[in-house]
Image (cartoon, rainbow, N blue to C red; front, side, top):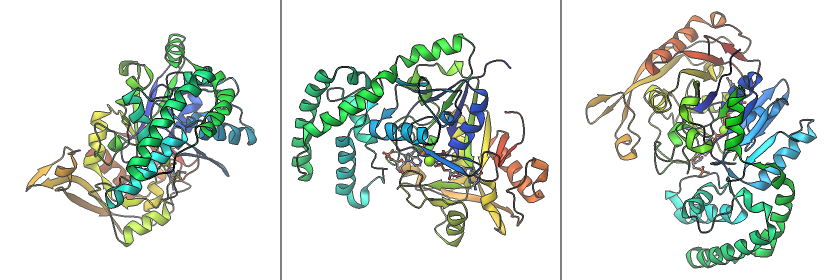
Length: 430
Ligand code: GDP
Ligand code: IMO
Ligand code: MG
């Protein structure tokens, strides 16, 4: 098989099932790459009775033959990453010699998480509903440059200690003045960095060189998006977004591989829509149907355990993510979760100021005016969890998938009928 570089990206507001799709595709990839975000991500892989929830390691890590890359634009929480490496080791999966972390990736430390929490608390009802993983503050320090720590800083602990003293003095003044917070002890932070450096400095590398060498050697690379396209800092529902380019537009800048070197973009969407945290959600079902989907689909956050908001499939939003992400085909997950609903609604357009629109307005002031225009189709009662071929699905489920293909304008290549790796239907060529 000729080498194939593939990007897997979420088309909604995250948690679409990217971990499962990446795990499946990693079978034919030599390298798996996280290109953005941080431990705000929670990607689940279920193999038989074993469940893995990964926050920083690419989901392909579970397949022992793969090289795992954490690229430049990822913000790395070393404590979480070490916990994840050790957790996999305890389950017999070793990362030794196959994990490469960009030396240029920025580091999330305790003061970032503290700032995230203090800011959210101070905003009260206006809060974004972040994961409190320090993501926004770390990216802000990266853009600000003067107070940033990168993975390469772990190579010189004396220099790092000096930098941390300056940074924490500044943060203590800031948090004290803004939030009345108690000062943080710099020595504790320096001490924990000693452990982080011991464990992670040997894994740091020039991952851009590594990826270009892998491409030149004809290896297949799988790029794993985190979050979803609608949480993209520049193209999502700002300010209710994350602090990185979480659509596939973040891939080239995130890891130094140009978009044209990626052969395939696979967009992952649920057969309905979910969102966790605040922000607009035109097709939200704040009623017993939303509750049914939440319970049947176990829609509680992988990272924070928060209940996810649930709603109908939003074809306008998904089609937008397909367009900005140059998506070739869809992986449609959680079709099984819709079993038991008598009728299903699909949003095919919005009405805004009396006019029908099919192009998603990411600006939230315009989005607030959007009234979803639905079409209603019959549901099904059959259990889908054992289906292995598209033809095995009830006619109503097949028709539902075909209608999504029409609305979004791309073929559905993969269908999820349960959380397990094996509960996946390959519909048409990927
Ligand atoms: P990610 O962040 O996109 O990787 O998604 P998460 O792992 O946060 O959330 C997806 C959840 O749905 C996880 O609990 C998965 O195990 C589960 N899941 C994935 N695909 C399917 C599916 O087709 N059906 C069902 N019932 N569960 C699925
Ligand atoms: P995966 O990769 C779902 C959401 C948060 C919040 C907003 C900002 O598992 O799909 P942040 O902590 O990033 O500053 O929070 O973004 N969010 C996610 N929602 N899945 C994710 O990741 C998310 N990562 C961030 O809930 O609304
Ligand atoms: Mg998730």
